[in-house]
Image (cartoon, rainbow over all chains, first blue to last red; front, side, top):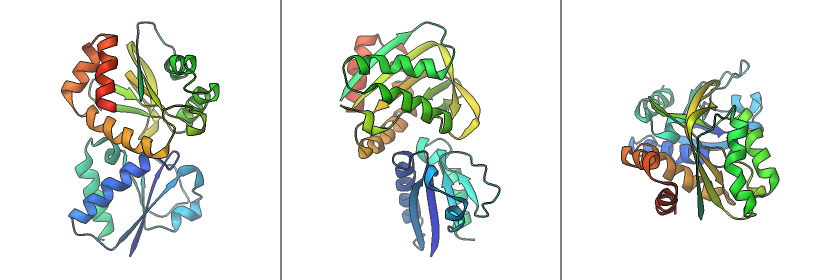
Length: 95
Length: 148
């Protein structure tokens, strides 16, 4: 089971939209062995980030001590270039 | 929920001022507390909300703490001189925004619904054209239909 963390500024709105988009996509693609979580960026220490297999963030993060791959997922919110970002996430999850 | 529309032809120096302009009618009707606008500005610094919607249009969607909202509303402002906002996907970059939707929503799930609705509309050319061209009063009615 891979653990994915979706993060945004306050952990309420943007991350919920992104999480719902991602969940729908993964269901469509038949990728079921994934656990999705969401949080506010303010609540995330490096250790929290490192406890996940993948981070999908609404904004670019500068976290030199985080080893978990980070994908900027603004596209999941806006719909602009969404397909390529979803594929990137899927590729990371089925590695 | 109530929708406010303003058209601004001034040169606005920064997003702080733009957010204050957006908050003004909401404060006048007691839909928000004074802290709301401050919270939006504060949040914008750490987590900007500017979006490059297409090659020639930027839209910002500043929002803030729901505890400072008395009654949910949206304040829309269009600027004839676009205002620089930080980009949501990368705060080291900025985007010149002609439209801002200041979201003053009292509940978390309203943010979710509103964001989804707005993002779909931002992909719709007819919507963007209407927002650009309608007169303030007509636009208020139009946005009311689209956002409720």
